[in-house]
Length: 266
Length: 307
Image (cartoon, rainbow over the protein chains, first blue to last red):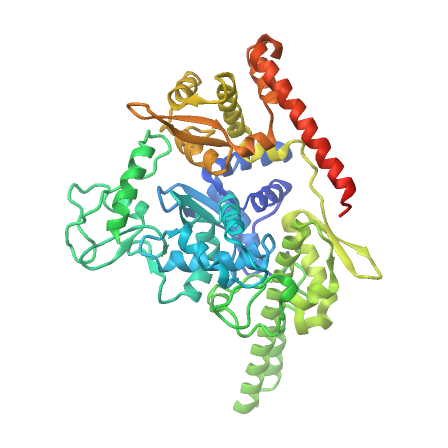
């Protein structure tokens, strides 16, 4: 490659297969992406030492930069598990979904997205979404059909469903971050700690600032008496644990606690 | 990518889009992000242009302020044009990758309509650069299918791996876990108490809330993912105190596998023949017969409704 002012990484079949497979899956958790990397080495270069994942990805990203895409790392909003997706840096639309869904289905997603962003908890109820079915652009959709479409969104990892309510999957947050900030600049919520887009989280009852659950976990990790970083008032919510793949967790229990206190959290 | 001229609207499916070729109304993010390195096939490098411009300036020591301004404006315009070209190439790459996923050939007119716009005259250069990116970065070859109608497809240059999807989706081990559970449910008479499921898994070294290197959090995988994906049904057993819950096969399991297949899986695990369990074997045979009948009636209906 000539005329470059910065050093670009080198692509081999190991990287190409990795990219192709990541594109197929859309989004992958860290344990899966490590397995993917190992698989690609095994197929194309089994004697090479497997490069550290972070460096491996940075190498690929330096090549992807001129294409305005990158492999972006995020964390799930509910328990801080690292996830990776191939994200378009220049888009201001949900174009990636456009190839898999019909016009009325995309509009259903738009409606659900708007309800989710406007909501206090980051969740929109199935009922409220389905009530908007008459307002959809494109071919008329019945409520029963809309239920199936919502399930399609869940299966394709654009939405998550919990007890009849829907929120954004980590993948959607990663891919549509910019689009959401630009389309809903007034309604969008931001985490006080990481300044990232916030859909689910905890909020201070006094001053109203919000934080992601994993950000809360990290920020209050060492304190026995958590206080709001902004107004210093007592932090009234349960502090979740920092994600640690080695440690055992009561995932069922903490989830139900979060659910019951969620209605009071915002 | 497929961008809306007006902000605030989402991309409309390609069949209905009217793309104006100008990309000026677009994201600040692009100007905010660092200037990307020129692509491998960039024929007109901004650095070269700047060099030429500087030389001109040097050869004309008496360049007036007005002349200098005009020169600077020209350089800026040229740089902007290069960036715009780069962006269009990038958008075409993404467009081709997306269209290829649907396995439909892409036509030149689609490319012009949705991506290239008024840079239509530069189509040969744009598509050549896009093709190079697709080859170098992703391992796809852009092939022209039909010279007359200008249709293209992507061919994967990487060698195909058998069962790669299964090995990798992470589904391999997870679906194996699902099979174990479906097997348990079937052998217990089409439903199994939650406690029985966890007892079986514990024997395999899988604990509900302990992060497992293959399954993630098993409890989440089973109680949420498998249930949401309709592989399993989960319901409370009435009249139990303390309340108990049970699993049964979900509709998706009935579609994607069968009693006979699951019985075969269980049999193999125990190194026996399916007939070793006569009750389950008879039930599986009946299920096979039902499926065959249902399949035949669908085919019969299809032959009378040729759509």
